[in-house]
Length: 386
Image 1 (cartoon, rainbow, N blue to C red):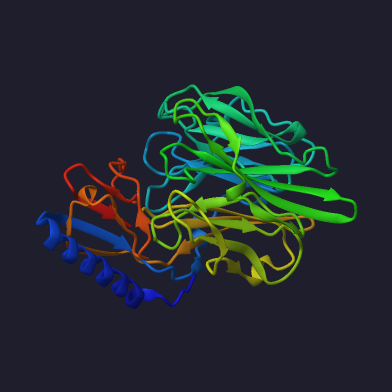
Image 2: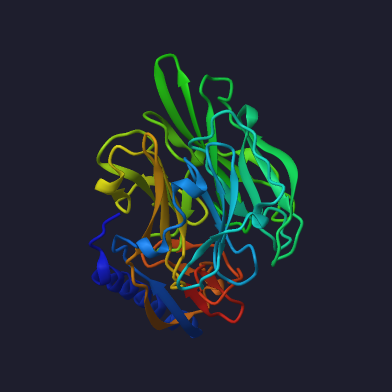
């Protein structure tokens, strides 16, 4: 990904789209208004006023799973620490300015049991289509454990559902597993990306493994999806992935934190250079190099919109030898909106194109919330692309 694409690249992409629109409009004589939202990643800026509580409150190795747990539209969190502690964080600020307050009632009954979860990743995601966020976390024996939310949108309550996947290399020594969850293939249900860490002989190995939800949004069934994997690498421990559309092209990108104590890039980014339905992970340039994180271990990013502007910001947790901390980063990308006229692409078999010219094949999806962050073609012919 090129951070210098900027408005010029977006303008060129929109011109191509407009040319396409005019051509097919002449053929069909049918057109409707379309709104294109797009941006070019502009970098990260530390935002200390957004920082969650410090190491002494949350404990070392904190891993964040963000979601609205109390129905007030802003993001709360469940935090997992290396000492098996599960903490609830309630956002008592607002959708545009978070203020964090420890509130363990958000995580009541969640019990985590594992031997070494320093690099575990957790996730909050609706896995049974009941409108409530469920919780995913590492368990013993290389398992990802699902906790179902049986409470309400305003007050979560948790029941252990059980293991849903087991990492294929779980018998290797020093095994760790963490999870990221989102709709990776654009079919309307949530999939999993699992990061494994283990030792094999004298090597430290990491691998990212995809699991497709081959069931439904209401009843998940998991199957390994090798096409989504990242190659096996020999490295220090890596965090579980965090997923989100960082480059504003309408598909999911990914970031992974480095676990060792080295200087340089502490968070690696992977741009999705495929499509919304078939992701291809390509090393990108929206990662993070920051002297504050040099020689830290267990660096783990989490994408989350903290100021309500529709772009994803980032919370980074990290550890030093005897201390640790968290740092919030604001995404400086500004989303541009352009309105053009466009034909009803359902007649031509194509739903539309992203700002990078990628063909979009998902039609008649539903956008929820006040910010149209998913590209769709509605039944009235209106297309929304971000």
